[in-house]
Length: 235
Image (cartoon, rainbow, N blue to C red; front, side, top):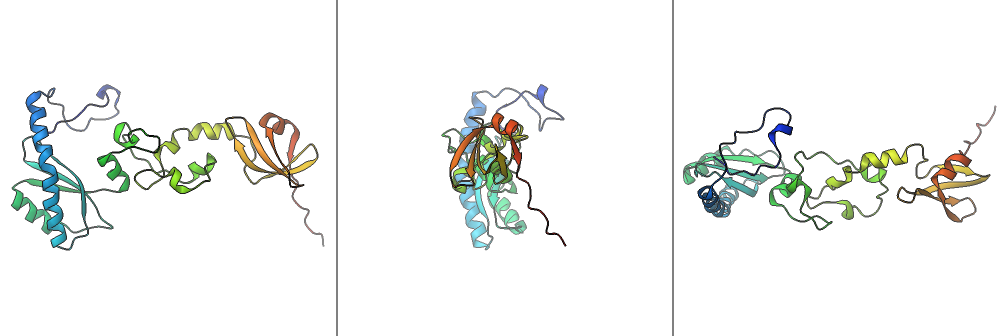
């Protein structure tokens, strides 16, 4: 039996909910939860010592003990697959508990441990994100985020989940516009797109004579044309 916090009404969920809600938690449940929670660091330490003694490359990062103190779930990271069957058997016998090991990745570790993101708010994966989706580098390029990777990397060491929040709006705003690096001709003047600002509705252009300028999208759309490709040599 676990103490859980309801984050979303089952009415709005698709499919069957995970587990069964028994009843609202009372003060006794909260007291037992605090007692079990206080035991977990010591149990993690014992599991880590056992794993190290057996030469297993496991790092335990989090754990949960049920309210009846019968079931222990431990999460760990490892560089690859680990055969922990002997460890699981020995530890279960030593602690007299039913134990489950779960291998997790870097993004799951951030969700389990929590923390603050670069924005100063609690991590999205810890507060409201229910599914952790892959964040490809293309999302950063589409939004013009070409600076240091450290600035778009989350606590987990992966690209920040929030890069996906406004991606669809960026794609809609960029529809029909030339891409960065594309050459255009505007009022008989040749230039290359070197930047796009969707907040000011402008593009930065590098002109053929070495100067630079900023042009509104509408002017570019109505008066520009792509630069013609060089003619193929004859013969």
